[in-house]
Length: 486
Image (cartoon, rainbow, N blue to C red; front, top):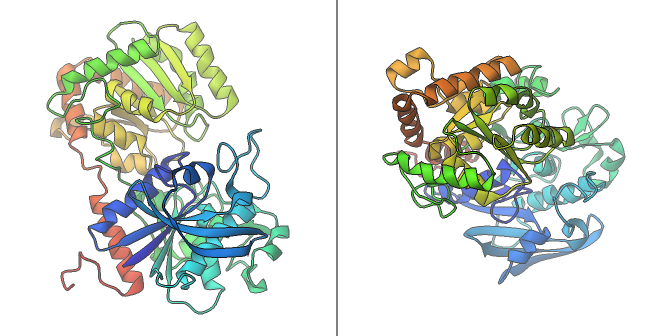
C-alpha cells in the first residue's frame, strides 16, 4: 500500500516540536506492515541543505503565484517529495514565524500549496506514483482532504491527524477566492469557520477518517472544555474519529547506545545514570547536593503549565530539589525562570532555546521530568522519560494520563507504578505531586523499581503502527500485512 504523509515538519529535516518526531518515525515503522510511506514536505532552507541527488518529477509555472518544482529524493532514510518553491519557503528561522515574532502573513498560501500539491499527487499528477491514502498532519496539511472532496472524482482516501486542536489555521474569508476551491467549499460542511476559513476544520470535515494522537485526547476534544469550538463536528462524526497513541523511535532514544550521554546504561544498570546527573550538575552550574533533580524540556507556555511550575519553584527548592529547564516561549515565563535561577543559585538553572543533544542528556541524568500541561494531545517527553529512567511527574490529561501509571498505594503494591500523576491542574496539586515524588525518591528501593519499570514499558510504535496499517486497510478496502486472510 502506498501512503503519502503530508506534513509541515519531518525529523531530521525540519523540527519545531513533537509533530516532526511522529512524521519522521512513521515511515520506518509502517514498512513492516506492508505500507510504503513517502513524505511531502515544504522546501525550507534546512530541507534544501540536506537535499542532494534528487530528481525533478514535476514543474509548475504557477503554484499559487510562484514557480516551483517537486523533487523526489531519499534523505536520512526517508523517501520524500520536496516542494521547491523559494518564494514560499526560503525564509530564515522558524518555518511559521518571521524573525520579528509574527506569523508570516502569507501562511495561508504557503500551506494551501502544500495541501493542493498533496491532492494532485493523490490524483495521479506524477506518472508512476499514485498513493491510495493521503495522511495529513495538523492544520498545515488540512486543505488536502478539501481539495479531494471538492475536486474531480478520485479513489484516494484521506486521514486527518490532529496533533493539537488549539492550532486551527484560521484565516479571513478574503483568502478563499485564491484557494483554488469551488464556491460550494465555503460552507459549514466544508472549510468555512465563523465567517473565515480554518484549514484544520477543513481537514476534520472533509477527511474520510480523523485520528488524534492518544485515546484520552480523542475523548477530551469531544467536550466543550477541550474541543476549542470543534467538538460538535467531532461528535457529529464520532464513528470516524479515534485516538492512536504516539510512540517514539526506540533506536534514536536508547540509553544503552545514545552518544549524547556521558555514560550509557540499561534498566539493569540504572546506578550508572549518576555520571549523567553529575554532567548536568556541572553544565547547569548546580550545587552538588544529592536531592532529586527535576527537569523540564518544553515550550515555555501556559498550555504546558509552566506558569504553575513557576509558582512552586520556591517550594520545590525547600523540599531539597533542584530544577533545570530547557526551552523557550512566552517572555514572562522565560524571565520568570531566569529570576528563579538568580534567587536560587545552584538550585535552579535555565537554558533558553532547544538543544537536541542536551535534551537527551537531561532525560538520561535528571531524576524526574515535570510536565504539568493544561492539555496535552499525547506528549513525547514523558515517553522519553520512561525510556531513560527519568520518572515523569505529569498532569492527568490527554496522552499523559494514557501513558503514565500513578504511584498510588494500589499501584505501588501491585508494582505497576511508573510515575506521579496529579489533578486538578493547579499549583497546589503540582506542589503536592513534587512532594510525593521527593518522598518516593528518598526511598531508593521504590524509586529504582519505578525507574526500571518505566524503562521496560513499551513506548515503541509497534502497536500503533499496526493500528494505522489497519486503518488504511479499512478505508481503502485493501488488506494489511496483519490481516490473517492476507
